[in-house]
Image 1 (cartoon, rainbow, N blue to C red):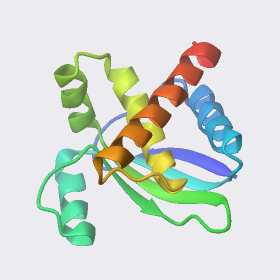
Image 2: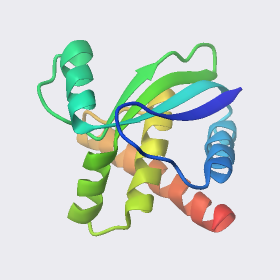
Image 3: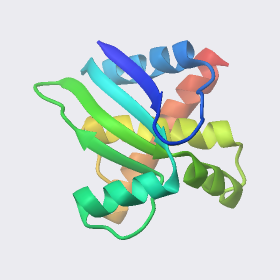
Image 4: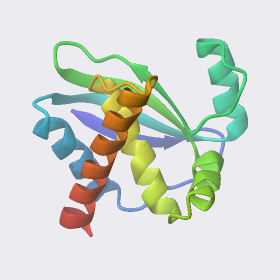
Length: 142
């Protein structure tokens, strides 16, 4: 089991890494999955756009791209997170940056656990799972 955090082409260091690892692990285990190898890569808009074009044929920036390597209930994947887009979204939604970052961190893990967000119903289910996970963080790690 390993949950790791890396910066690719920007200078960003995540605070509270141990609490965040523990939180992610507990969210995964509470849904009856096991933690495998999960790598978070913090990056720029340019880097995420390049990957969005290359791997998904999408010509736009996004806050997160999740590459799913989950197998037989063992949650694993690489998760790219654009720090500038997370910051912009925090301003747009009038929430603290850290709260928006937590939402995006767990959003990627929820994708690895099978949550989708293409239809309105899927988006609602994803948002509810995000909110429950954020409440769990606030209750247990703040």
